[in-house]
Length: 221
Image (cartoon, rainbow, N blue to C red; front, side):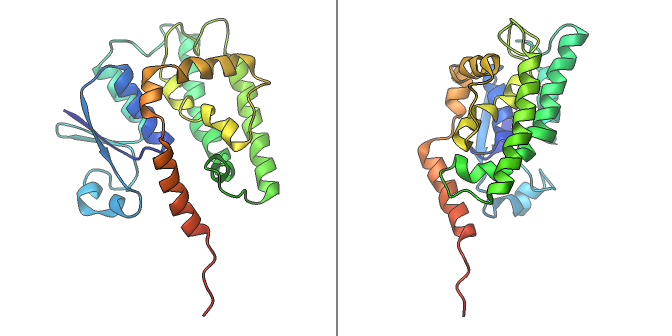
């Protein structure tokens, strides 16, 4: 059976979790607490870079979420999550890669705000919002009259971008100026796979506690 090592709050591992559910696959979910468990020898034997997600399929250990998504699509092609023409395939890949390379790094200063923690440097927050806005305008331009990116059904673009974009309003980035993207978010968050993988209030509180502890000033001696 497939075994997914993940952390519930991680968008990188959530996208694989979503795909497993969308494919209707049987799998075991192993939660990894990122307070040291990722450095234990058993996990390092699977993921030598101590990153999540990691997926184990028999004797194959896999890291890097996009590689894992490609593997799952190739091994379990039904239901298909790949567009069937070059233009739409390019749209899907652009959404995946722009999410990984541009959107996710830009949201780092917004993450505390998303969790309800005090905001950081206002200048960095404004810069982050400007970068995010550039991505959202680009995504809006890629959506047409179909419900998903380049497709009537969800593709690999949806678990990737759809694990980050719906969180943005909590970080102070409104989606009101992006009508197509906002409707896309609504369609995704109504799906069972998104609802089942949504972080619970308890999970968010646990992350907040850990982050607050890290942000607390060190007492002087």
